[in-house]
Length: 252
Length: 252
DNA sequence: GCATTTTTTGCCCGTTCTTGCAAGAAAAGT
DNA sequence: ACTTTTCTTGCAAGAACGGGCAAAAAATGC
Image 1: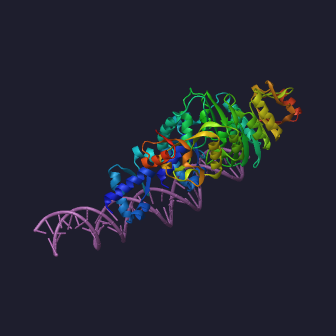
Image 2: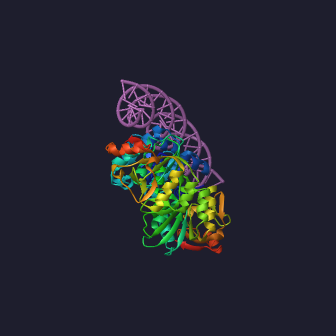
Image 3: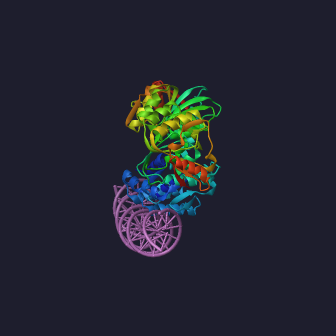
């Protein structure tokens, strides 16, 4: 393989994914990481990418188009929450992950070197997971709801029913001690209920604005929450309530 | 063998593959590598190629077309194919769309103002379709295969079995008049067969390099093809063969 | 037909390019 | 403060390159 070929392939991936990992490129091209780093150095010198620790990202003008999946609202918070939530993962586990921007952040926060089996009905989560080489991904199909970014319906329920998971990362919901976990859509709530039923523990990561709010459709009681990941600024009284229901509190 | 003959063969391969290796050309032509290098030097001087260490690649204006088989030439050509294929759509139809870069291009080429119901097992196609407000999207879940970008397996087959479609846009396949439609993966072939069975007509859009090539796994006979969308430069003889099997030919 | 010239080709050799390895520096994580 | 990972630098082996040279082949002139 020509040096030039590698350069072209690196440019291609940069255009498609916005980032490249040195180690991954090395194994893909069948060369040493040193060679890849040399490639990256040259391309960086030519201004075609920007080097970062561990690889490279698309350079500024190009980056905006590819890397910006910014859900504009509380990006940093959700990334922090996502990293904390990812800390709960153990290699070899199987997971359900449903929709919501926090869960998409979680999918992006999963380290590349952890082996997992993940079933999700969220297209955003699924897309993010396609970058992870060690994750076995199961897509839960069904009728796609644009507003939710997830699949729901009978097909989805049937697919969930065939699976089990160690943890269920439940997203985009309201949380209230008395009303428990609530969803904004009836069909979505059904899917969440099915996932909750077939998983050993529920993990919820929420920003403060979701705490102590209730949505129309009930998913499960507050006592179903195994792990609750919250911001450091979350109101202590509310957390104490959830804790008394059996939830472990984790601060991001 | 004349010098000019070699030059032409080099140009040919450059057009087809985007690159040539000095050593390989030497053994193919039965001459020394020095002679090949001289050839390459001359062609480079004439601007017909760009020399690289170990051989040569197509020169800049042409290179975009060939070197990165997937990306650029692919994009332009496949976009043309996709637009032509999208011309076959009628409002209100229901479709199966499976994987492949051409089908992803198709998904992006679907006009925003046409109402459709689309079922796909390709995450790329699904993502592209989420932008279209009038498309009802059904995601066909299952085990995700990174190399294919699609979901396959029993779950996928079960989901397909419940649906029917007017047209099936079948992608990433080999096409050969005698061997018919062939796929590169066993599980993928199964899904394609199921989709073919449950749809009224098959549409295939292919670049020239897919024509007259066969992959290991057979999907269906050539007579199953209703519409065949090809480049203007596709070999007429091959097209005539498919036409005699009942396929309508459309030029992109 | 024969000699001469021109072109092409293969070989040799010093030079350049690429690559992987090793060792030390720098950065990130704990 | 420590460990781990990644990065840079220098170096050496191997591959590829260009120029020079001579033999072979083809074209040309006589």
